[in-house]
Image (cartoon, rainbow over all chains, first blue to last red; front, side, top):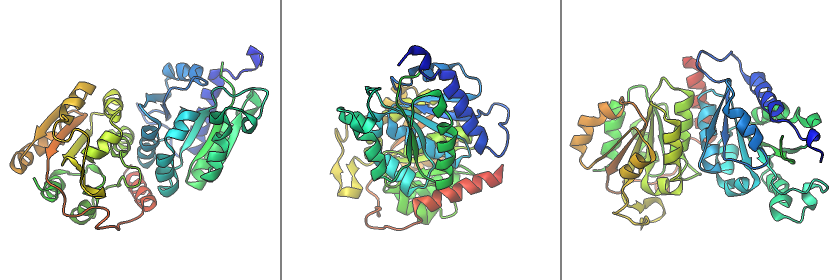
Length: 182
Length: 189
């Protein structure tokens, strides 16, 4: 994929802000972030993470594990904050019990951007020879978690759409990041 | 110390703190503090410290008290670093150290008796850590532990609990607890 077709990180950050603003019922108070991004660093989304580190409206918190990120998200949600996760597919596999407990049993609207590291651009993820890529979508299907694939600028609307969906269904919703961000 | 006595002491001292119990603390807390603003970590063992961290970050003006277990914390030990990194000043992490996985049959935790949880929290960067062995000392120090700048970790040497989530199941489903506390907090703003 040509470099100029990769999604620039600032556009993803703006899409996250739009997602958060779409759910807030009141403007952020002094000192309160517009929303939180919980990250376990992901190679595909590293430019977004770097962008978030300098952002004034969003608060980035690096977590030790994806299990933690899910549980922290639950606490933030209960406390009235907006929150999104940015993780890697390996972390999604590693944290499925917490995703199940928090998102399905707890009814917490977990929204996650999940990087599909090593995904072959010419293949659909389900056709990838790499199990890490191939089984990510079916895993979410098993958990009845709606998911979509973010690849180009035209897909950026998926971020507020699936964020809102997670709130509407009181459960998880995932947007896979199919290509490395710019 | 009997964990039930510890929970009664915490309930008497907690003020308006938000509370996150897990594992053996859950059934006793349900009885001792039925009206406390609480949400239990059940079904994702090891998540209490993180659940409490999220609450503390979203509600920085309210104390958050996590009632954790030693076996539980070991399942998400990295959360000590995550909590320390986030540095919530309103966070008190109470660790019930009985040395066993009581709920599953009291199997010993790894390195039972030699793991220094307060020391690990201090090394991770918690602002205040301590270990307490008697109920008398705990009662005296609770006001400090619930008000000093956090994150705080207090390791308590406790006996096994009277009840576990296996011997005393029940309570509201997590989904109900989540929405009830969320609505309660929204109503306070």
